[in-house]
Image (tube, rainbow, N blue to C red; front, side, top):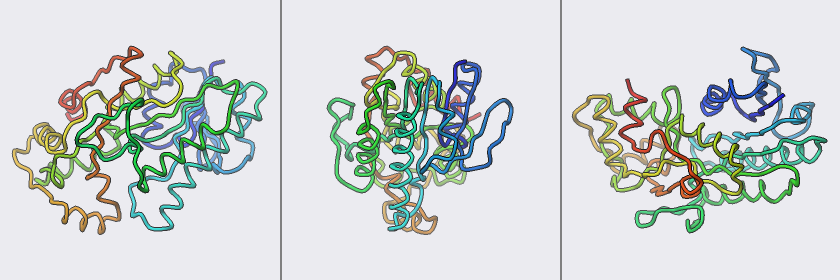
Length: 302
């Protein structure tokens, strides 16, 4: 029986993966902080992402384990939130490593979330897995600690891949929903200077890329981003075109910071230039279905 485990799989990305893999695996198990249950053939098993409580037995004989656990960074970076952002990633990664080592027949492949935010702010250079420059601030240090916790524990019988994922654009979740709302209300102009790059990936290509990584047994770090980063100003212009709003009021950096404070998030999420490309995926032969933002938005906005 071919079994897939998705840790913290009840959110937007988890649902994207379940929709993609439901007919490709005999059994899908979701590790969740919610109640244990079975819904539409999917088994949900309670875990706290910190310690063993019986859920670890589900990893026996699994083909693949995917970990999506981690507190959302869409919050104010208070001391408490920073601590929770870090610990939620480190603790879940460590306990899954520990569970794999305790298995008689461990998962064949462990894919752990990471983030394309690990690379420095860049207007000048495209960041790939080989030559990308990792910087030094809160978000980048979180990403480095996360990957260190993942790779530090050796799992001799389990392959490992860190998924440096960018903004995932989807119909029912992710960043596109609030951006689309802004554009519809005439607030879809450039954000900040507008010259910062946005690295993104269509939800279908996100799932297809993970499928490809499993099939080809690609290990190490992989950038899960589309091939063409786009400047914020151009991103918003294409979005306005798709929602058929001819104008968009730009939001300068000062107003973004004020607005971010009131909606309890951080302006960095919009202002950082993520200029990241998927070198390893392309060199391994992966073909993107949505390689341009225009194509992606036409599919997602109807």
